[in-house]
Length: 321
Ligand code: SAH
Image (tube, rainbow, N blue to C red):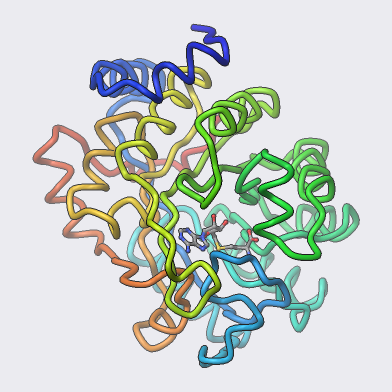
């Protein structure tokens, strides 16, 4: 199905839950009832950027900062693989402490465990992305956050929207499975710009789209803003499923953090991936991009999935192709 921008805006405006059912149907038809798990390791909360919404922004002096060593990262990855995770996601702030050499050696060691590797470490050069790919990285996640260039500029001081886009097209050129996505409910964001975000996902031909409601963090300049609307975020996700059909779409943690049933609602409205957090409790608390980040264990998830007729995929890494 192709939807015009106007049609997308009308869907986002409407209260009709039919769109969620349609997305659920397309999800089942194209990617089935299996749910892929991605084990997340938050290996550094040190960040040189100042994204206005993010609790880890470098200007937040209240954060206790940490970096995991290579052996700490590998220990978590080994445990994750032992527990049945087929993909390890390495996420961090933009932390230049980790050189290309260090990252490549971490990537190749995790790869040897037999897991697929997703990176979510921010903007780098083409050459750096190439080195990670050569070392064995399979996927890269970098949300565009918003395609509204004016809003992007306001939310990301000193950052360059064109460079963020360049990174995404680099991933495609280098053969990564490319993940992007947006925040829903940023102050000043319009339905018009959310429709543009969805059309951008299609233009990029993304392999994975993560969509989450904005959650204000008390130690950021956006602390007094309203949180994003979960129902709107789920609708943006549903329309994305309907347009991009066979991609991977996570039920994001931000959705569940905003409302208890958020994750299951997402899984019944187009999502087919969950990213449980493998980071140890001590460091997990310090990786506070937004407050009240919830986490889910594999067992809890398995039980909840069974209730909605779904199951965890255990026999493959869940590549799109
Ligand atoms: N430094 C990496 C990882 C960022 S954290 C990068 O630039 O890609 C992963 C995602 O968390 C971000 O892309 C952003 O969309 C989301 N996020 C950050 N702060 C948030 C907030 N306050 N509410 C909801 N989501 C947030």
